[in-house]
Each structure stands twice: as structure tokens, then as C-alpha cells.
Length: 229
Image 1 (cartoon, rainbow, N blue to C red):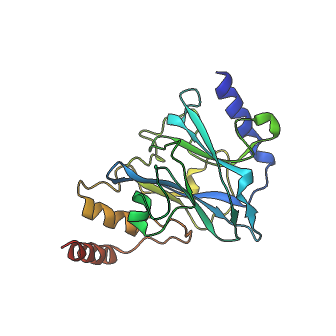
Image 2: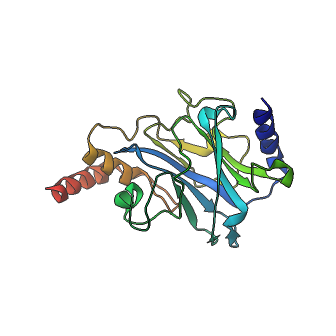
């Protein structure tokens, strides 16, 4: 319970935070290994941000007492740009399911952590492992203390993205600011059609998302089948 109380204390500080970074997209996809899994962060402000001051945290099943991990970010994120954390082991540039799916590398690979569709994800300013240093949760996806299974925000084998008219981080989580693809929204049982769904409905690195019309999705599926022959 001490860990849970500490995490809640850190989250409560968000009301005094002023941040231009938001969690803008989250994906738990369905290709081999249950990949790609990733979280996108977008700089909605007018100035570059030093990402080394920020951490992305995973609260397992929404319960800090059952598991919590955080990864320090790195680099500089320009105004309007997005930053992607991929949860997979990768041996270097051009390697891994994220690269195989999208054709470019994520900004950060986190082999020491993992996300599943019932986990809460939080973006922190400062190290959440040291709350007395002033760590603050500037944005959060999901509800701390709640297992996401069966919730509107569950993203198991699916995806969610921030609606483009919401550009400020929120803590606590506000469902109305998100589009939820829903659990199993990327699941078909076939790698070719799943890849097409992933490419049509997820946009890592770019947060100006408009879902493709069904006709374009069908064209994409046909093109993928032809290329695989």
C-alpha cells in the first residue's frame, strides 16, 4: 500500500504542472509476439522540450502494487513533433517488429518494460521513482487502481488516440478526449489483414490522425495481398 500511496501522491501533483507534452496514441498490436506495442508522446507547445526530464511509466493492470516501471526518455522534441516509445527488444536501428511494420525506428526502445491493453500509462516530469524530487504526472492514460479489462479505455489487441482538439495533458484521465478503437480492434487472426488494419488505424510519429475511409482500407488490403504474392 505504501507504493500505491506514493504513486497516487505523485499523480495528485499534476494539477500544479504546466506541460506541453501529451500522450497522444497507444497501441497493443497483434503481429507475432503481440507486437508492435508502443506509446506516442506529442509536443503541443511552441518550443522544443528536453525529453531527458521526462519518464514514461507503466502501471501494471492499473495497480501500482502489482507492478510499476518507468523509463527515462532522451533527446530533444521539437514543437509539434511526436516521440515514440516501443516496448520490444531490439538489437539496433532497422531491427524489430516496429521497424518491420512501419519502416522506421521508434525514438526509444524499452526492453525492460512492457505494456498490455489493461495497463495504465503515465507521463512524468521527473523520476517517479523519487517522488520527493518533485516528480509530477503531467498526463495519464487509464485510471489508477482500475484494471482496464472491460473498460472503455481497454486497448488489448487494439489502439487509442487523442482527439486532435485536445492539446493539454489531463490527470485524472478524461475519456471524452480520446478515440478508442476498442479491445480486439486490430485482431483478425491473419497477419496480412492485421498488418493492413495496423497501418490504416495507427500513425506513430504523427499526431494529426484522421481514420481512413473503408474504401481506402480495402484498397490497402488488396495492395498488401498482391505485394505478398
